[in-house]
Amino acid sequence: MSEPIRNKKADIPIAPTPQNTPANNAPISSHAQQPGIASIKEESLDHATAASLFARNPGLVSMIQGKLGSLVGRSSGYIESLPVSVRRRVAGLKGIQKEHAKLEAQFQEEVLELEKKYFAKFTPLYQRRATIVNGTTEPTDSEVTNGRDEEEDADVEGEASKDEADESTTAGIPEFWLSAMKNQISLADMITERDEEALKYLTDIRMEYLDRPGFRLIFEFSENPFFTNKSVSKTYYYKEENGYGGDFIYDHAEGTKIDWKADKDLTVRVESKKQRNKNTKQTRVVKITVPTESFFNFFSPPQPPTDDDDTVATDIEERLELDYQLGEDIKEKLIPRAIDWFTGEALQFEELGDDMDEDEFDLEDDEDDEEEDDDDDDDRGTDRDVDEDSEEDDGTSKPKKEAAECKQS
Image 1 (cartoon, helix red, strand yellow):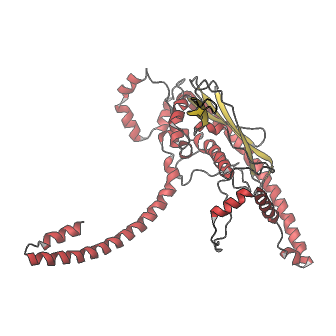
Image 2 (tube, rainbow, N blue to C red):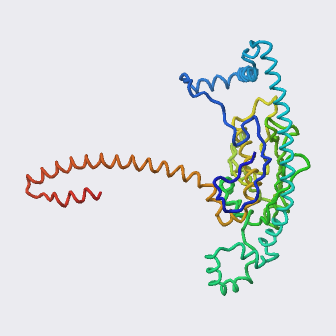
Image 3 (cartoon, rainbow, N blue to C red):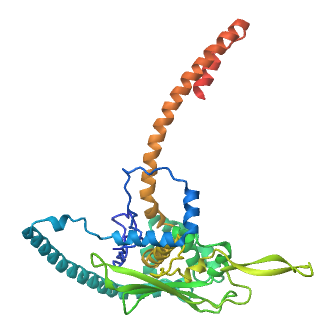
C-alpha cells in the first residue's frame, strides 16, 4: 500500500493518497528489508581472498546460488511429523487463507477502481493548474482568496502597484516545475546544473492509468534547444497476478527515447583521449562520449535480471528499488501537491519526523556535553590551582579575575 506524506497536520486538507503501490517479494519495495540474524557472530574472513576465489570460479558462485535457492521454502519436517488429524486442520486453515487471499485481491482491484474514479475528478484541477502555470489564464478571485492567508493578504495589498508594473513582462509562473522538483528531496539529487537548463522548458507533469495495472508519467516540454520531443514519458507496469496480500507486484518500467539535438545529449559527456599508432608512433587526440549523471537517465530505467543471467551487477536490486520509488514519489507526492513543493511547504511534512528524532539525540548529546563540561571544569580548577600557587610565589597572581574567566569559558 502507498504511504502518504508522514506526520501531516490533521487540519490541512490533502488529496487522497493513491492506494495501489505494489508489494514485492524481492527487495524492490521501500518497505522490504533484508533478513538477518543478529545473534550469530560471523567468523573473521579475508574478504579479498574470498572475492578473488569467487572471481576465478564463476561456476562455484552459480552452484552456491543454486543450493541456497533450493533451500527456500523447504519444509523443516515439523508439519509432516504432526498427527493426521492435526495436519487435516492445518490444511483446512490453508483453505480458509486462500479464500481470504481472494477477497484481498478483490479489495485491491476495487481500491484501484476507486482511485481511478477520483483521479478523474482530480484531472480538471490539474488541467486548471497547468493553464495558470503556463500563463494562458489567470486565477479567479475566489481561487486567490481561498489560497491566501491573512498575512499574505496584507503583503499583497501593500505591493499591488508593483505587481501591476510586472504583469506585462511576466507570464504564468516561471520555472514552476523545476523549482518543485528541486524541493522534492529524492528528485533534487538527480538534477544537475546542465539538467536545469533543459528542465526550465518543462510545462507540465501529469499521470495516467493504463488499461492493465500500472501507470504512465508524462513530462511535457515547450520547444527547447536540447531535444525535439514535445513530451517524454515513462511507464510502470505491474504483473497480471496479485502478490501475497492481494497487492500488485511491480514488473518493469519503459521510457521514451529522447531525440537529442546535435551535441545536446545531457546523459553523456565528451572526453578527449590520446591514441598512439603502434607503427608510426604518432599520437592523435580523439573525442569519445561516456555516460554521465543526469535526471534524463530516469527515462532509461534499469531492467530486472532474467533467470539465466549470471552477470547481473550487484547493485541491480538497489537501482530497481530507487527507480520504482522515484516513480512513486512523482505520482503520489509531486503531481498531487506540486504547489506545496514549489513553495517548499511540503518539506515540513517530510522532515518533521526526522527532526523529532534529531531533537531526541540532541537532548542526549546536551546531557553528555554537560557531563563533559563538569569534568572539564574540574580539570580546569586543578590547573587553576597550580597556576595560582605558582603566581603567588611570584607575587603577581590575580586569582579572582582568572576564576571569573574560567567560569565563563
